[in-house]
Length: 366
Image 1: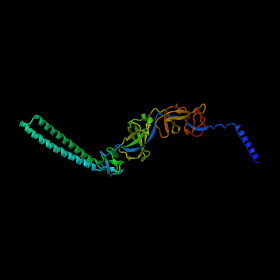
Image 2: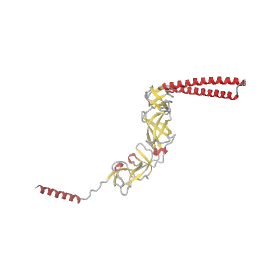
Image 3: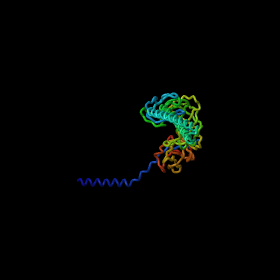
Image 4: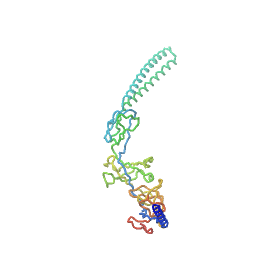
């Protein structure tokens, strides 16, 4: 009985497989895609995020190495000119100073000795009881003694200066922006331990994109909007642009100066910098229409004749808030996929629709 049931099951399976093999293959579904046409533009406004910084931000460091025994200020503290910020252990410097003082004493004693010797030889020479060569030798020893004393005195002055270098003082009035040292830490000469935001003019630090850096220049007018003052745009200009791009972000650091000196901008505030780009921009497309492969940006264009997708490499300008300029690669009459660009493939047949989900007629410009 079991064998007969198994035989019936096998037969039914074969019938099902045979029926499946005779069916027509399921046709691929035509995917709807939202498309737009590039918009012509000769001028666009690009926006860059920034941070309010002091115009002068010197990095402070000890002029000699040693162990930090005390840090007297914290980040955010207001400091005045010549205020002591930190101290090094002065013991090694004190010992060096004592050694230099001992060398000065030794050089002075040696000079007194060779001076007396020279004076004695001079008297003997005047009485013709000594040859000229012996006197010249004594005279040279006296000059060497003078030189040794001057050298020792100069080294003593340098040692006294080093004693003062154990205290790091603020060169200007301002706010301590960064502190990179703690008590007990050993630092090297010239190692940055504080960053001081000098009181005075304020600027906005931004980063400019590498691919469009040629469109920005020093002195270019901009507008700045502070986070604390939304809706108010303050006139400014690009004061400086770094000569080289950052090795990690591949952007150029730039500073924007306010054209009005009395701007209530606090250190660290967020800001937006608006620039009107007059680069040779031909068209703009939504940011969502652009993707990239191996650092090559491209867009998907719908072929009007076949309704199939074609990849089109493009050259981009500086990104705007919602749009990106296309410098090269588009003629202006193409229909570009505006969303979901990472979900389509080359040669895929699609059904083009507009933003209202209505079919697009390729003969009519959007």
